[in-house]
Length: 371
Image (cartoon, rainbow, N blue to C red; front, side, top):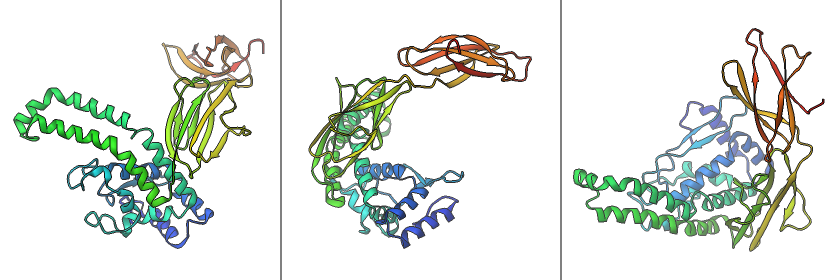
């Protein structure tokens, strides 16, 4: 396996480590995670599998030059994808995951030792396998959910519709409007049928077994969200989020309170008030994250920008309904008030302060009235 970037030494070191160390050992997998962004790689390979990306040896990867930069991938070259030319039909049934995991020599040699190396070794780790199954399921429940995919296909078809007659007249490809509509319907068929086959491929090759239905919501959509594996869920109890996962593969849940709020516990989970959980979804799981206003939130300046001439604007966060005083100083000794700011019911506020252009700079701070 080789990297098509200038930094081949770092890539070769990682590959050599994986060749000589079993990733079934948690410490070895932890070392690889220091070199490779596993979340990014899971999204990349799951997308490649779902879309039927034939040319999987043609890849683009990079890492930050800063210390601790990890390898990440860029998705491209999908011309065979979604059942394009050369695809084995019906494309939505094609078991791409098997070709990603096993060097079969198929797909004109694209499934080989080098192209399957990384994923083959990573799934030696039970933790990576759990994460990969869940990450793939995340995509099937979000960006590749049929309703979402169909909305994008229909929107692009509607955009092209006014031009397609002239395109056919000029280029004779497709040969007719009927053929074009048939091609659009093929894309729709792929969007509808592909998810079920991908779930079956996860069962066949990675041991996922038995689907489970998960329902998630938060008590107040302004108060926080739920992190589900790779997804951020912010759905109300009146319109909860639903997804399909696997009963023998524990999911990861984390409660994420918004500024000015704190986590108050889970609904649907008995006896566990931890902010972060790993849960086997069994057959069904219905969970609500409850949040309540915090009286301990420290007000902060979250952003600023130059405003009107001689002024600067600040965006603030703190307790909902909280009164704050913005103060300014030129020397960190004497402070003057710039006015009182009332935060709204989400804990947000904005204010404007004057800048003295004759001095070398200014300092700002937030205080409670009377302090």
